Length: 479
Length: 126
Image (cartoon, rainbow over all chains, first blue to last red; front, side, top):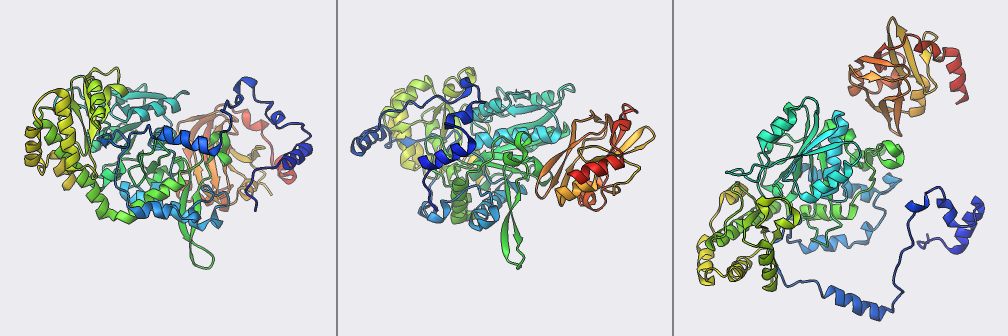
């Protein structure tokens, strides 16, 4: 079978059969203003010159940095077997088979992914994957509207700002999206305000379809998910848990605390923090919601000869079948990245994943101690897992000066929440199992230097003393 | 072929009028076209229907199709048995496979629907 595009004679024959003189005539029914304008691409360059130019562009990336950046994308160690397995040519095939049952290998890889994620989130149904965590979360919100036939969704302000932005885009036409504020001060500052949630749910004129909260939340804090779920269900709404998959090895899974739907970003499962995507959207739900979940579901059965076989169990509500009444306008999956996540999970296993999560929590607690020794306090008091916000005067300038010293000092929260005074002078910092004590000492030294505060000697002593210390979060992670 | 005491639509729904209410389902012809039905989504009791508007969805192994309300009115009952046994629609479309019962908003509406002979002719053409 030739894999080349249509040749000029091919096109000519097709146009003749259609009685048209040009391909453009096929698009005449699209108003001109809506048609794609010609791409303004630079002229072709010789390979040698192009390679030199691209190398120059690539060299502008900083690969020397010690990173404490998380904020939705997390660096983890990926066993070499994962990428090696992914390179096998068998996987580079149609990712979305339209005659699915002949592609048993593709179906099996999706089935294995669904099974592994189902075990992780504790819910029965897992879709074959979506573009990324933001898209999966927006789809989860729309599911609650379809299932309850209500039009209003509440999302915690501590759900990732990019996810909330994506949801606002999805909700542009008709549906309502309201934010649940966070507790402003005290031991639960930075977590979803349960009293405010109860008030928002109590408006009889505006019944709520679904409530979304993240665990851990955007600020790294642990939410009272079962309490949020109980309030949500008491109002007849569905509860969506936005989760980080590695954390589920040590935190309660959504299925246990009563979530109806779980969504999240699958990138931490063996996928490099590459540019901002492509990533992996995880979406799971309880069995009664199976017909509301967008995308496709693969199942296992036996064929006529009694052999194990994989089938496209459900995709009847996708766009190519249901057109404008499809469950989603997106009808695809991230097959290769779902496969990467499956290979990662199968390679490290449940105990390995628990170690990854628990070690990350221990490193974060070590980081907290090292920063506390400098007099740098956390912004919030609630328990965290492996990410937390710190209060730093003039955070943006500090962040820039840390970069000069080879440290990526997390995220300047004011960059994502410019109108929120409570995060005006704060950095969101994160540690994972690949963060070393040396990295932490370097960060503390650089920060002391930038802030012109205490001497690095004091800091290293503090790290040595508190390095093995386990905070509340560490204890929670280790249970 | 089709029961003569029922009324029909060109979208292959049937209607049995009893007093001020009517029972609604889909015809045997429709079930044969759809194949094995695996799921039926019906409106909640108390919701109101507008003649011609979509009131539910029927999903077979090969397609998902809309159900169109043959009559206007309020839904007073829906066949809960179909959530566990959607195959009843295939096995007994005019009996245990019924879908919803509606209190008629306009007693004149059923008269405008097809009778069995007209529907026989329509389904024979299709």
